[in-house]
Length: 197
Image (tube, rainbow, N blue to C red; front, side):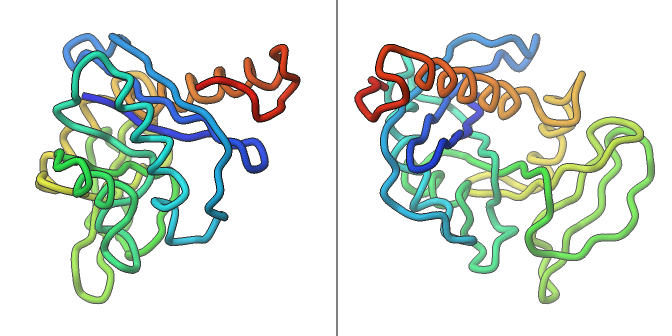
């Protein structure tokens, strides 16, 4: 499975696609893509800003992913079609989103135990779950994107978070996109848009 994230500096972005071994949670492969971003930041329209770079990073992997996990939302979105849904439909791949903060949907208090969860309900519809991936830390917010059930998203979010609050695929994607951006900023081009992907 592949975790995805994008890091920005002004109008320049770096996307990372990180393949994780589910059994060991170790990094198998990393691909990045970078370049200027033309679509502005508009809440609720993140897909239009991030998808070109994410598709480029995914295309650089040695083999197509079987499942993608986005740092963002799927159904837990005002239009019920967040980044994870958008990308999953475009690529026709199972996909879901894991976010650090809630966007839409109310949820009840969650027990402190790892693996506890509460449905996120918006307008009478279950759009995701607030999931406690580690005891005593804030939950993450999980929503199905495409071709996957919420139950499977929930169990995977817990399974992939053996050591940290954030599941390993998107945690590693964040690390690698930030690292690549720092290399670009301090490289020979001095942060100019001449940097390769």
